[in-house]
Image (cartoon, rainbow, N blue to C red; front, side, top):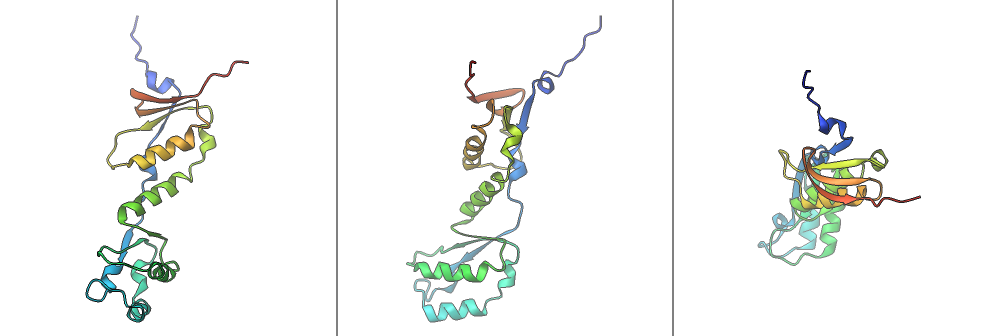
Length: 172
């Protein structure tokens, strides 16, 4: 009798979800207000407005942009708002915060586009290893999105998983 090799992982009915597929791919840029401060400390309204008016905003065309100030200066809220009015027409996405915050925001936005209904009553493995560093924020978000509809959530690889969630069995 011939030994038949059976792929138990393939027959298990597990769906693998690779978060790398939702990793932000677009180009990003930083708008740092420190570049527009007098003596590196003070924001002068008239000078700032003039600088924004004369800036070539096309360098931010179709990019995801975070607005920040890396200098230890007190920046009035209106300065960030004013910057956003110039960026919004040209940039793909505009957020206040550093590059890490921008990346997390874009990642969450990409995850929100997942059709969760495709995972209804399925056993899902959230892939745990890959080429890109995936933040805990993304893993928590996908867990929140999937938990209401799936049979189970596991973390890792189909051949070696850590159980995360199992829906209760409802007796009829």
